[in-house]
Image 1 (cartoon, rainbow, N blue to C red):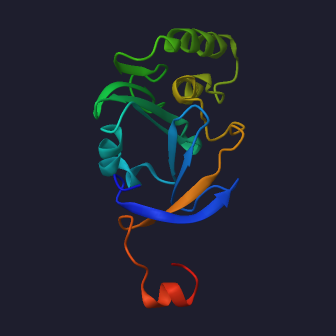
Image 2: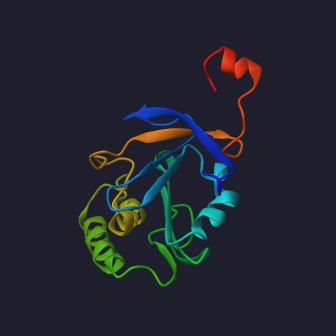
Length: 171
C-alpha cells in the first residue's frame, strides 16, 4: 500500500472497487485492482520493484487486452491484443514472455481461424489467460477462495484521519 502511496480503506468482500483495491491470493500474490489503467501506471513500477509482478488491462468494448510481466521493477515482457493496430489480425509480443504463452496463443489462434463470425475475437483472450497462468487471478473468472478486496484510499498509510472523516466514521 505504501508503494502505491495509498492507505487501507473499507473491506469490499466480493464487490469490485470503485477505484483501487488490494487483495492477497492464496499462493502469496498480491492483486491490485484498479478501474482505470492510468490510475496505477506510475506507482505500479514502485510495486514491481518489490518482486515479480504482472499487470493486465482489458477494455472489452474495443476488445483491447494487454499483459505485462516485471522482474526487478523493469518490464520483462508484454503481450498486447489491439484490433486497431497493424497487423490487424494478430498479437504484439515483446521481451521474454512465460512459456505458457505458446499453448495459449496456438489455442486462441486456432479458434480464431476456425470461426466464421468477424465480430468474435478469440485473440483478445490471450493476454488475460497468460496473466492468470502466472499469478492465478483473472477479474472476470471465479476468484480464489478467501480472496477479499480492501479498497484503498489516496494518501500514504499511517496518516491520521481528519476531523470530518472521524466524525462520519470514515477514518
